[in-house]
Image (cartoon, rainbow, N blue to C red; front, top):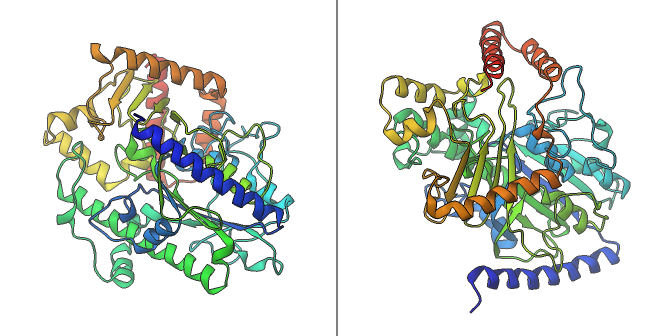
Length: 493
């Protein structure tokens, strides 16, 4: 008897084959679709289409009903700039030297390898009008790009598709503030005006590795309101496309740049940090379909080019998600390197059933000093509770142990929260060896540039720009953190 996943793969191949025929036919008719990417900051898959029950998200639900929802979509990097550098090129950030968050901003610039370019340039050459905008892009201002490499601003014509020529197809990126909204000073008032009522902290159920604390509950409730607000914004995009008669001619992609910004989410390779929603709706896209195969966010580039009838570069590492005959991925890979001043080296491979994480700096704590994260009330509260000995043994170990295992292995079928490390269990040594080899092969085959330590010159160059942009009080914290990073390095930690 075929297994569930074998059956699902067969169904997907049939659906993909049908879509491939429809897409090819459309391209042959000279009617390329518009492409719209809706990219959200700092948000996991907490939408009702993904099983979230504490809030309702009707507009994202509509996308799912009318399109294809991917349950197992993952980013290749759990932090903004590294993820967006990968997203816009269809390449692993580790392969193109863009793996350190907000790097190359000083005198040490990063240039893309020969033959690699942001896909808006490819859309432009194919006759598309390219734009990048959103609610925060006012006047002529472009929306968030956050690429870690040198790029030509001319790849974007504007921050809105309205400036295109009559009948000209467009590639539009709509960037939404997402989970970052809850950090705003007037967020409570925004929620009251836009949503009417706020989500009650009483309905929040925190993961077991966080303490059941009122500050954390309130933050998570505010985050859920950011999800509701994002859903409204998605509805506004859809309404505009519909009112302008463009919806049926437009492929809409909805995703986020990484998971929720929390102590084990953003910046880390647990599913809280790398699992994201992905829904695609548009001409030729199967409607009401839920796919369980593993996909990566770099697949958006290849899939978008294919839908537009534009050739996918042979070097592109992302896959066309609707390519006829392609077998589902057996595994997905993610990486995290330096974030701001905090030096880190994490790699992971995830299959449908297991997650393997390799810690490059096991003698450093999980919550290393980091001005960005330590400025968040939730992390400050966690540190307070830890100092007051108010954490249970699990929370103390996971969040505040002074060292980490070199390898982590989790059975996601029975441990979705990734809290029971099986790496040293005798019964799981065969799986550990297999996952270890998978990761090693990927690092070699994709030319993972994070295998080599970052030069001190680049680190100092980036830090100088970062320090110059901050206030005096924060500069002092950053200087202290930078000194700690260099001390650990000197000690071989």
